[in-house]
Amino acid sequence: MSRMKGAFGGRTSEALVFLPVRATSPLRALGRRVLVGLILLAIIVAIVWFDRESYTDSADGTVDLVDALYYATVTMTTTGYGDITPVATHSRLINAIIVTPLRVAFLALLVGTTLEVLANEGRRMFIDARWRKRMRNHVVVIGYGTKGRSAVSTMRRNEMDLSKVVAIDSSAAALADASRDGIAAIEGDGTRRELLQRAEISRAREIVITLSRDDAAILTTLTVRRLNPSAHVVVACREHDNVSLLRQSGADAVVTSSDAVGRLLGLSAVSPNLGSVIEDLLSSGEGLEVFERLVTAEEVGGPPSAITDERVVAVVRNKTLRRFFDPAVQELQTGDNVIVIRQANT
Image (cartoon, rainbow, N blue to C red; front, side):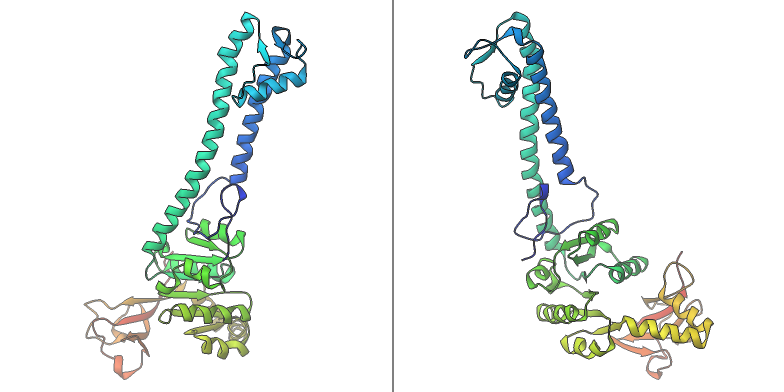
């Protein structure tokens, strides 16, 4: 099973979900605590060393720098062998007023670090279990590179609930991108059955596969389809020759990146304006966009052409896509979805 980095750079036995948060690096937090502990130790060493005439060592009666370090260490850890002791009144007062609070602060730091490790790991496991429990009809994006991020960006612009989206990627940079984009993520290889099960793939509604290699995409599609026979699976493919293999593996839709780019380049060569319109539809944020929505009560009974503020290009009825010129959809019905071209929301 793929593993993830736990608190303080360790490894846990299960790949837990990374919910979108902004947190300090565990190693950095640990480094700060170690530095504070060393500073406390150095303060006690300095106190004993500069006032060494007020201390006695049962071994030879004198206290040197090594003795001061030894005394500070056993004092901070509350070991207290008693072989080195303050004998002067002021040195005992300094130990009571300064050294003892420093020792308590060190113990609080040590115990606090241990408790935080346990609390963080327990909290992570609790959050993971709660997240998995509520994941139903969600979207799983396998591969969070350029295509995966673009897919999630399009979902956001179409007002999809991103709390119902989870990304899977083996790259730490991709996980950081997912966190910044506000979606959950799981670190690991998307071809592994165990990792897909951690993402509740069997209960997903949509699965988007955007891996960099077609052979990995085919293997992932086979595994996904075995775990979830009913989800809608969309796969990005680099080479057209692999489209049929992906469809045989269980993909409902295959987008060939090389063919898509080639068609756009060809259209731009034939007609720059036509290429610009297609590029406008594919981009987001301004100009035109493609959108699917439910017909309103006012639109029921009328033809698609009666919708004037948007341009209807297709109607979805009983999960079947029909073009706007199909005679069967010249009268819109309750429950129909229309696919329209409209002005992009800016």
